[in-house]
Amino acid sequence: MFDCPFCRWIPQYRGLIPNFVTLRCSRACLLVLDSALALKNAAGREQFKLTHLIVGSMMLARMLPRALTLFKTAFSVASARFFSIALFALSARHFSQHENGVFIYAITLPQLLIQLGTIGWLNVIRREIARRSEMPANLFKGFVLRSIQIPLLPVLAIGVGLVLFSFLKSDDQSLFLCAAAITVVYAVVAILREYLIALGTPAFSIVASETIPFGFASICIWFFPPAHATGAALLFLLGLLVSCGLQIPVAMRALKPYIKQGRPEYRTRSWIRAGGFSLLGFGGRTVLDRLDTIVLATLAPAVQFAHYNSAQRATVLLMVAPMVLLPVFSPHVSKAFLLNDIPLLRREMLLQTAIVATCVLPLASILILYPDAVMGFLFGEKYTTSNQILGLIVFSQVMFALSLPWSNLTLMSDKESTYGYAHILVLLLVFPIALGMVQAWGAYAIALASLVANTVLFSVFFGLGMYDLMVDEGDAYKGACL
Image 1: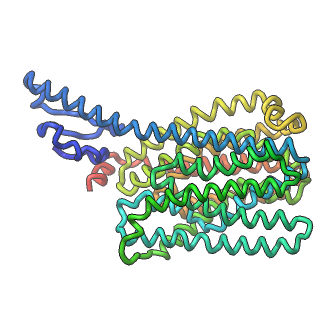
Image 2: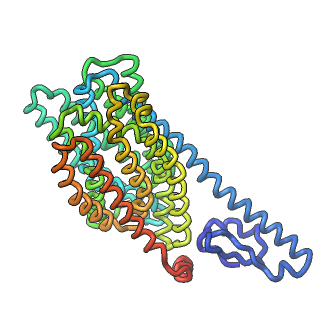
Image 3: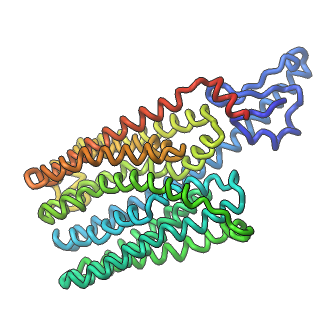
């Protein structure tokens, strides 16, 4: 008997499987049992059936934990998106459109600064921690230490910069001080979130890092509505502090065995290089996602910014499926690439794409068919005019959702440079469009630019992913056996 190179959990059951049974994989990476000896007599056929039952049970036992993880992660993401919509819906109803725009700015600006300030290490953390069993213990300890030190230094510098800038803005000083504190704490929450995802607890990481901050602020605004946007931002900051208090003990308990290892080994230059290319990609992606914050809030009235942001928040449920899949599938995709497991990669990508399409397309149809009802129900009658740009935003988010599994494949397969260059080139293409048309077309220009960007990125990552996966299966089989 030889071990199936794609289903490496078989060796632990070696004693249960008859020695004359040969195991190998089909194109779909399903076990096929083949034994001429087993078919010659009745006793052999009984052994063949028993083996088939054992292997089938093992496959089912292996699939159930993944399905359970997907279910728990789906619930976590859905709760996070619900409270995210609830928070901004409550702020839209409670504050004036100007105050609501200020509150949105206080929350979205730190999100932008975190992606830039952590210099691409959030992606590197998820990928490397997922490979901890294949890394030497000393090297893994060195990565853990560097993954805390390097990303937090620029974030602290950004926080100090916001504090100094607040003294130049006497009217909005409290707002920028609050944004500085949110930026630093939010960065710690984001780093811990990536650790917990890679350590195999994606559902808890999402609940702690997203559901609790947004839920805490939403409940407080509902029962104790603040008078100004700064008060609402402080409530969100308190939620982030609660998130840190929950995540730190769990992460420390999981990492404690590795931290106790001997002298750490560092590959700082290699990790910084990977983080640098990831920064190009994540920075470009973040700027594309925050075109409204960068361009619309600067060059157009706050009312336009509030309308665009509200329409975008209405489409947030379209991102639930990919947000569920990426934390669950990323460690498996990373390991499969490391082991040159091309058939497994094909299966993982096909499954992710099918789930995203099945979940996203029906929701997108509802948003396109009933824009007035959706915007009026979520944000009130004064935001029903946002339906003029809702269709473009829906199409843009659909393309973004479909591209996420394939862009994640690029990252998990050590192609950070490709990921970075693609986003920068697309940003150079659409940013002048948004900048040139925003004063004439307002929010419509930002929606159009986002649609062009997400369509081009989907085409690039899907094409590159398919090219990488269309290799000769015999070569992939040989590589997996090595």
